[in-house]
Image (cartoon, rainbow over all chains, first blue to last red; front, side):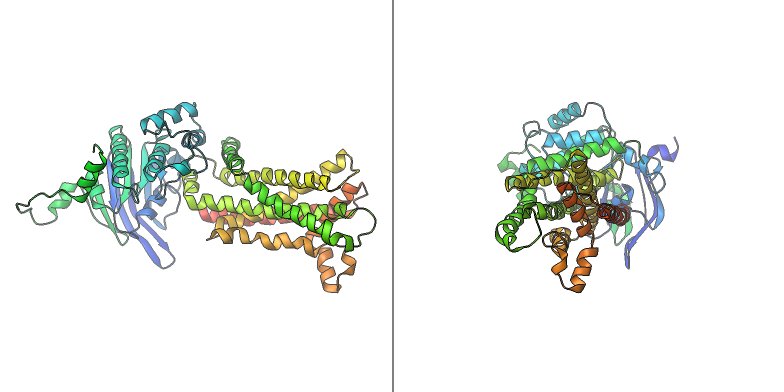
Length: 254
Length: 253
């Protein structure tokens, strides 16, 4: 197989500036098909800008990017057929019901049987009961689930999740993680950005740390850990974390 | 143009119309201000205004209709602004959807919403004694002028809708448009105005639109007003469309 067939995303020398602010200063990475790739970085590191360029919402100043084999600058319509984007804020229509949101996206992707697709996804994301309610009445976790469900319509081979769990409570976070794992298990390539270290640790096959517009390191969790001196063995009494306490009290089976 | 342009626009139009159907208050608030003005002008000021023969409701209704459109397009800018803020705009743009469909759906929604508001205002005017001897052709001409006027103002509204940073900014542009009819022949004849004001009133677009609609309602010959009105509307439409599309292209690339 050629690299274009094995790599779902190839980014080379990507640069982007807003006036004097150099957000991306030459970013390179590749993402293998069917893997979960985490772009880790603090606020303002350029994660969202990178995702916007890859999803054809922004034009890069320099460098090339291919998604699913298509160049984002010259083959934007083909890229859009291949991807779906879940932005930083749940991009759902608050006035429509959950089901109407799903039907809307299915129609805009020109698929047959939008109603059937919507019902399947509502069931898969445990939203069937809420399907006929307006999204304005949903909790943050439900909104995010609907948001991700909308991204799956039409089975795009590449999915971008920009900070998918920012602002969610721990329970909702675990639900989103579960959904992301199921996606990758089904062969979808997932690029997610996050500022939470544990999220990258939990989900990603490979992690790249983006800092001040450059990728500092890129590797598997094991490789990143090896960058530091070898682990010392220490005996520490394992106290339950507040998260453990919270989750056991509210009764989530994580 | 993408092969899906018409289908995608129809789907997105359905979405915005659903928004309107679920918050009919936007139609009502659009119609309430012109209706209040109409009541005030007819029952408070109207007795003191000399407009020649005929009832004052007949005289001022065309101006009120234009004010209705000017206040209605504030919601067009508002709806577009909300889409831009919420992230759903980016979702649409990252999908294999015809890109200009997103804008056209808002424009057509604006047209539908304004036509409903205009119908409500007309209904109240009829209750207040508005009568017209206009024939079918004249009514169609009035409808045509109002549609063209609404489209022209809607494309103006698209510009702040796309570029505003705050919700207030997105709708504030409509205030001068709402007041423009006061500096025209809409409520009083222009001949009592002092020189420069009169010159402005007689040469601004609202006057020609108002005069044309008034003549059509009265069943009188419209003369050159109709062509001046159409030229103004078409000119504003083309210029606003150009600026709006330019703003849109800068937003999405």
